[in-house]
Image (tube, rainbow, N blue to C red; front, side, top):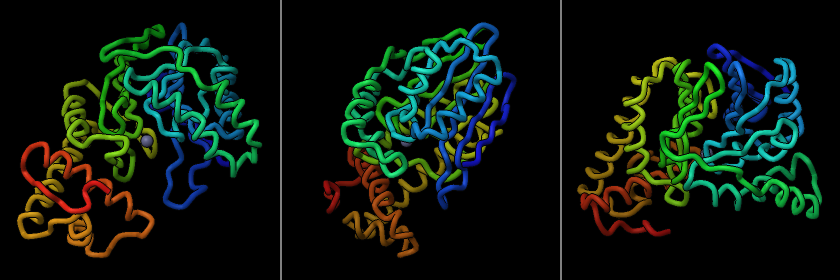
Length: 300
Ligand SMILES: [Zn+2]
């Protein structure tokens, strides 16, 4: 698999393994942040052998700096899968947001399961790995910081994509690591199962208050204009919300009718369930605000 490493800011390395391997899917970005005294890893991809080996090889090539923390932005398998193996090889504490800990610890086994087609591990191996990789070492509160020497990371609670999602600001470089909260390309999935649309929009407004000069997303290329991107994303979600209110008022009183009215059949079958989830997430917010009520299909 193809590996690329880009220094996106001084001492901040974006490591990507397997870009382009699957059509339309952007490989997860893993970041190595190197300070004068210590380093940190942000996200860990799926945990496939070729990924873990590539990250370790690059880390060794810059002198294998002491790793203070392996930070997980959120619970999904393409971000947490390599955490246990990287911790074993590099040391450092596995760290996440307060409200994400339980989900990460219980979903770790699921990420090993998702790996099975690639690694062909036996059930016994999955069991062992999931037990070994189960623990999060520390959680971080909103505003907590980690000093690496000439580089300070600030942890920012940004619920929305998941309820415990974390963004991390590298104060010195002005780099905002956004996990799946903001993507280099495509639209972040907000599903009622894991996330919350009202919280998501609120979190984006919160991020406007930080001095970010670039966004380092969980997938896709770096974003050079953080404020414009945040405003664009907020505007996009609010516009969709207004569209839904108008469509409901015009008589589209079910999730299916809204799906048809918004996409007019122009949606890839594989994306149908995702689109349905996004609409449901919007409706939950609008119901809470008293703007729509009694939409069919909202509960299923
Ligand atoms: Zn995600």
